[in-house]
Length: 229
Image 1 (cartoon, one colour):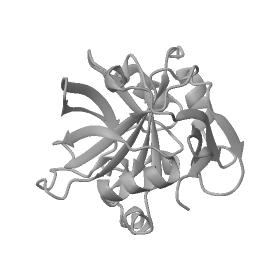
Image 2 (cartoon, rainbow, N blue to C red; image 1 turned 60 degrees about the vertical axis):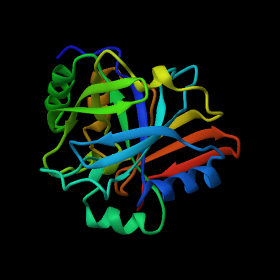
Image 3 (cartoon, rainbow, N blue to C red; image 1 turned 180 degrees about the vertical axis):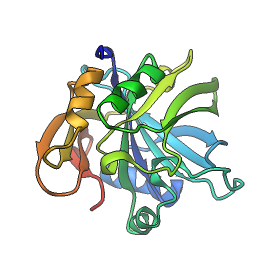
Image 4 (tube, rainbow, N blue to C red; image 1 turned 135 degrees about the horizontal axis):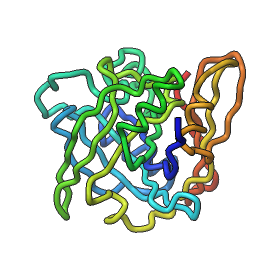
C-alpha cells in the first residue's frame, strides 16, 4: 500500500483528575500555565492547551484533558482511556501522559494503512469544541472501548477542518525535544508508522509493556515524562 506522506505530530495528551490538578502540575513541572481550551460535548471532557512548537514540529501543542464532571454522561466510552479504572487510579497520584496524536490529511486512508499492518485505530468520529475565535471541527479515530493502542505508544489519528488550534497559540517557552516509543519484539507498530511516513520518533524494543515517553525543553530545563506503568 502506498505510504501516506505528510503525517505529522499534532499534539501530546496529559490526563488529570481535574483541570485544576493539571494546571498545578504544569506550573510545578514545566514552569508554564496552560492557556484556555474548551469543552468536548461528544466525550464530556474538557481541556486546556499550550504550544510546544519547535522547528521540527511547528504546529505541535500540549493538551491537558480531564473528565468534565459538570457535563452529562457521554453516550459512549471516552477517548484516551479516561474511563479505564487503572488510569483513573493512576490519576489519583497525579496527571499522567496518556497519548500522542498524529495529524493526517486523509484519515480514512491512514486508518486503512494501519489496518493493513495489523493496527486497529478505531472508528472515525466527528468532534467539535468552541474557542474564543470560533468553533474547531475535526475527525478523529477512536476505538469503541476507548482503549489506547499499545499503551499509548501508537498514535491517535486526527484530521482537522479549516482551523487548527495552533493557529491561536502564542509561544509558551516549552518545546518538544523528543518522542520515544517502547514496543516488544515483533510489534507491528514500527512498520505501521513507517507506512504513514512518521519518521520523527525514537523506537526501543524490549520485553516490557509498550510505553510512550517525551522530552520537553521548558523553563524548568529538560523534562522527561513517561506513560504510567
